[in-house]
Length: 391
Ligand SMILES: [Zn+2]
Image: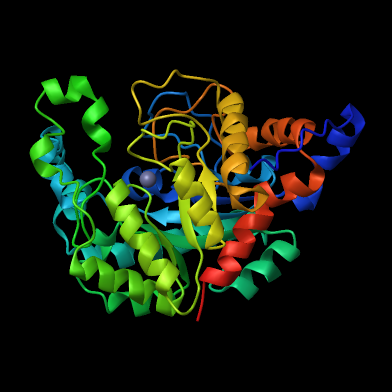
């Protein structure tokens, strides 16, 4: 099946179209609060980070979102898993020296989750105080439409990892009530819902230094608690995401989603799409079709990472190749954006921050029709949010 239409636009068409609101980006996955929560970095200040990891800089700040023409972004809550503080031994020194790190390593996870969500809300309040009526948090899909319709940038709350619930499924109601729209169930270490792919296996140097031990990993599928959680998320209307889960885990989640009477979409918010079906991270060609059949979407990450065997291609070239692959196997309606900015260190030289959405959009418009680009940049993600978020 191939719906790829390589309609080349003229330079003039492309130039006028990049400012068109139809192509405003909805980014399904980024972590603008991660650096600020841990290190106090400011979202309202413009940053120009290097390509390597830098704790006092960040990729997603207000100016970068505005410059890149972002309509809405999911701000993914991520409090480091407890296992990280055992597995990565230098963190033991950090927690002994810094009260902030000690707090993150020891306070109850559900309390930290609330604190993190409050922190993200305050980040927007602070930005509005300093920059004006330019950004708002949406608590429901209608709210998101109102905010983006008024030309403001819209932030949505999301959660990465079921460990944030501290084993308490009832907390899902509380998260839904405060407007959380999306949850990635597995993450970097096994949690109450099941196992995950070992993302650290490629880091040989830290492993030699005694970090990222395989003994803390577990690649099993969903637990009974995990099944209950998926059903609960589908019921209350928080988008379900199995990114970071193993193939077996993802298959089990897909079965539950397909059989749920509410017919919710399944999403993979941030996928490294290389066309390699043997990649344990997926999505496989078959999964792309299956996710599309639920009305779901797959968010293209803005750079390659995870797989040591993959050649390091430039960001925009990789994103366009990934889109081709998604369209070939799932059609036009499955493609979305899920950058993972500020969630990983390996940004590409031509895709360092949301500022680079502008050249990406131009490149997309040279290759695809305007209708297709409108779906890829925002239309498909908005459809998934409309059908998966809220009762
Ligand atoms: Zn992730």
